[in-house]
Length: 80
Image 1 (spheres, rainbow, N blue to C red):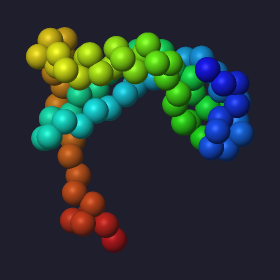
Image 2 (spheres, rainbow, N blue to C red):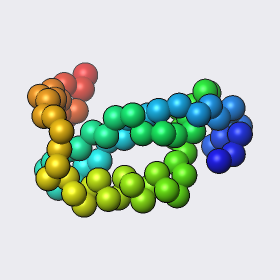
Image 3 (tube, rainbow, N blue to C red):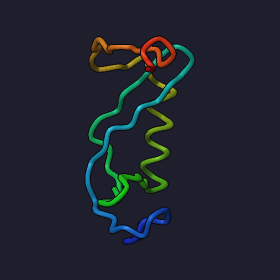
Image 4 (cartoon, rainbow, N blue to C red):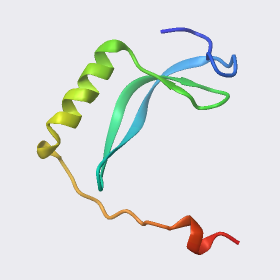
C-alpha cells in the first residue's frame, strides 16, 4: 500500500474502516476492515487480499452476524 493518497497527496495511515455495500435493495455494512485511510480526504485503499475477502463476504451475505435499523432519508423530500 502507498504512503501517499493518489487523490489529494495526503498521508495514508493503516486503520480499520467501515465498508458499505449496496446489493439490490439490501445494504450490507462490514466493520473492522483493514485499510489504508487518507488523513486528509478519507479515501480508503485496500490490499488485494482484503478486496478478495470483501467479495467473499458479499457472496456469502446469508451469514450476517447482526441486523440494525437504518434511517432512510429521500433527498428530494427534504432538500430546501
